[in-house]
Image (tube, rainbow, N blue to C red; front, side, top):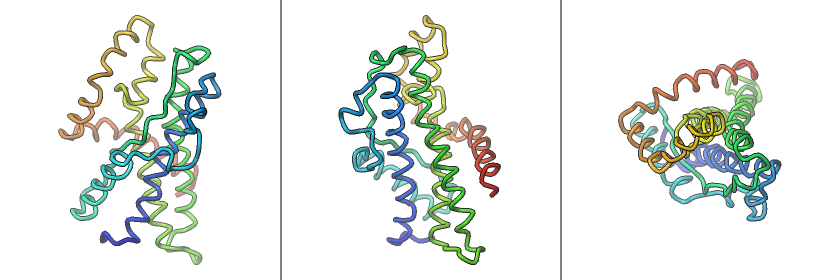
Length: 218
């Protein structure tokens, strides 16, 4: 597959929506549990332009996609949007509600993966009404969303899995664990460079793929 404009568009659409709707889900759920911060700042929206980070949403994923296409290496996506501001102190029960706010992002990715899975099933080139371009986009949508779900469920702060862990751990241990957040991004980069990150994500990827296949009939 070459890096034509059509290819870029087919990949860009699911990537942008996977990253930005992930963030919007955090803001939406936070609002349901009492924190209006993201809503007041206009971040509880399906408009990707409100969430795009030029580096994390476009440059980094774009570079990884280009390298995958050019080298024929397995696709691995790493990226981020503008973090949705959540004031956990505003939540009705901060420690408990953090679980739902943090989990909303990965859950949104799973729902999107299922949605793209249904589209892939009905847009397959093998179908009489098929459209190969739409099928490519849908396949990318499934892959991207499952990868972002698996990545964000790793129990490393500031990833969503880390916040879920803080919510579930006893208060004293959770407080100590939360202090490690400053080292989290560096740890993710080290795991990525050493290839360990993909191995840690593999079980969740397999489980997510199984769920998508079971629900969509792929």
